[in-house]
Image (tube, rainbow, N blue to C red; front, side):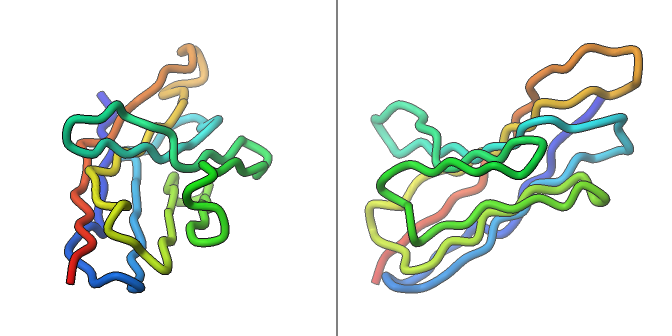
Length: 121
C-alpha cells in the first residue's frame, strides 16, 4: 500500500510564500503525472498545477506567474512553490500522483491527505 505524505501548509499573510511537498511513503516503480488540486469550503475541487512525466507544466489561470510545480523523481516527490499568496488561495491542497507501485502493476491515481493553506492578515 502506498500513501502520499503532504507537508508545508499553514497560515501566511497576503503576499507571503509557502512550499508544499508531497512524497510517496515507500519505494515505487514509476510515477507518471503529478498534480496539485485545492478545495475551498463550499466549492468543487479544482486543478491548480500539473506536471507530466517529461516535465511539461500546466497551471490554473488564477495562479499563473505565482505558483510553480516541480518534481524530484529520485525522491518520488512533487512540490508546489506558492508566492504572492492571496486570501482567495485559502483552501485545502491535495496532491495526486499517477504511479505504478511495481513493474507489473497498472498505473493508478493516488491522493494525498490534504494540507490546509490559509492566507489571512
